[in-house]
Amino acid sequence: MITKRTLVLLIMIAACTTGIQAQGWVGKLKNKAIEAAKKSIENKVEQKVERTTEKAADRILDGKKTAQGKEVQSNEAKPAQEVPAEGKAAEAEYQQNDFVPGSVAFFEDNLQNEQMGEFPSKWDLIEGNADVANMKGQKCIHLHPGTIIEPLMTNQDSYLPDVFTAEFDFWMNDPATDLDTYYYLNFMDSKKEKCYEIYFGEGYKQLEVKVNYKPANSNEGRDVGHDVRYNFKKNDYNHMAISFNKRALKVYVNGQRVINIPNCRSAVKFNVIGRNWGGYNGDKAYLTNFRLAKGAVDLYERNTTDMSAVEKAIAETGKFVTNNILFETAKATLKPESMEEIQKVADYMKKNPTARFEVQGHTDNQGSDKINDPLSQQRAEAVIKALEGLGVDGFNLRAVGKGSHMPVADNATDEGRAKNRRVEFIKK
Image (tube, rainbow, N blue to C red; front, side):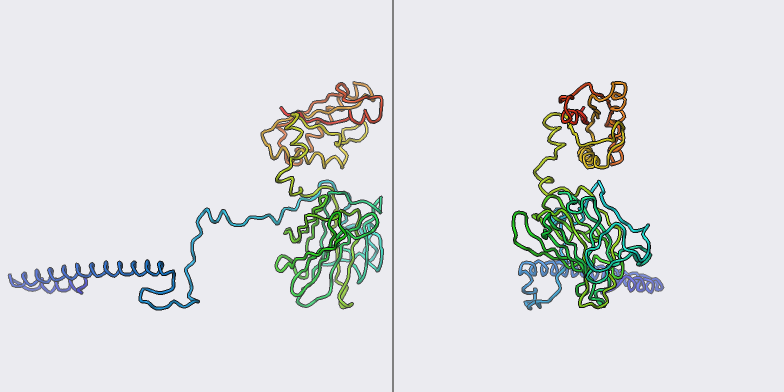
């Protein structure tokens, strides 16, 4: 086959000659080059057709034989197949970071004001020994081997509500070198019988999280566990979060859910236990930044089939009326326990961002209209301010004080007056 470079060279040589003879020679060379190029193109087309045919045959034979009839080795690498857009959308989707901290805290302890070396003031000692220490620049509770502590509460026998969250940070050693420290959270009923026990500590080169529990309405003990192989920090603090909603128990480590129990017995109190394997190097149990709060991630049914109380009331009557938003006596100051109810309204409004409401404040008839009318207005405004603090657009809300002019019960009784002290959300 004559290349372009050869053709140019021949033409240049021909140009150096003279006469008709040279011109004829050049013409013959040109014709020969054209024929060669034509044949080359035909050969390339034939080769491409052959390769295309071979690939089609290979696909038909499903990889069992090549076009030459040779067996394909079983470990031959296959080209990656591109996943279509609809296939990618159909991949498994699940939520493992759905933790929602309770909105009303009833116990918090970051130990910042504690005296080093002393027993932590917000806790009670059941067994063993504990003191305030400093680990990696963070004040913490140092649990000696076998120590049991529990939070100090006004009602020490029963303080956990049906819906709550618990959060804290715990120290995690390097499991590859220190197979010793582990912790228990023991949740009990009013008879101090175990409802569920959360175990977490150092397994072989990983963090182990396990739960031993009893289902609701059953004495059968069950165990579930999870090895947290990658989502933990060695020789550092890790964050534990627990969510309990009536019967649903979820446990999270560093934001990822590792335990999900749908049917667990409800507890009213708990304690914390620090232990170690065989007494070896057991001084590495450290806990800090505790927070207990009312409220938790919604039950699974609420996300699928059930309507919330706010949604149901508005769908049926066009308004939501509540006596659970409480104020200080004769003031427009919200009590902390009111935030759980306000959060429900905020959740509804964020799901329905175009909904507009008139927020009405109502009082009983204790006191004059001169006092109650502006007080009810101020209380309605306080509710709107709290909703705005939870991310609700205040443009969709209007405060109206109704005083004691629209009672729904008899003001002559304590029960009736309690019903009249209410907040109404009227959809507009």
